[in-house]
Image 1: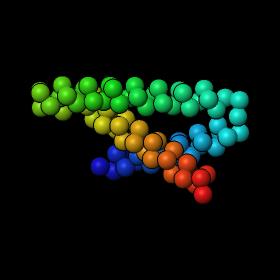
Image 2 (image 1 turned 180 degrees about the horizontal axis):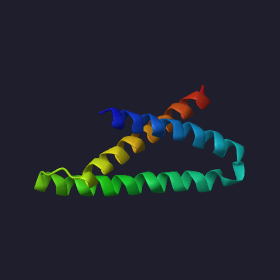
Image 3 (image 1 turned 30 degrees about the horizontal axis):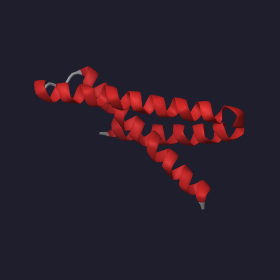
Image 4 (image 1 turned 180 degrees about the vertical axis):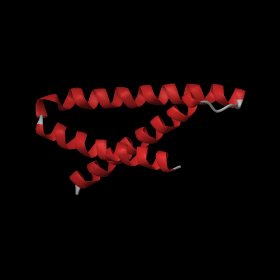
Length: 90
């Protein structure tokens, strides 16, 4: 549980760092946003396709725990980007 929370806040921190960095390099902001969306969607596809297979087998492995941590990191990243967007909008 503690590791999942750490991954979540690690994603939140990375979102803040990423948002600040892309603000400085305005020429690369479109490419950075496209890579962020592509990586989040790829992680979601891998996670949810694996979860459907694990539910059929009902077994937890090291690979499934790693994917759960990746999903927590991804959620933190998305949450951090949304919070930064609200900060910039106000």
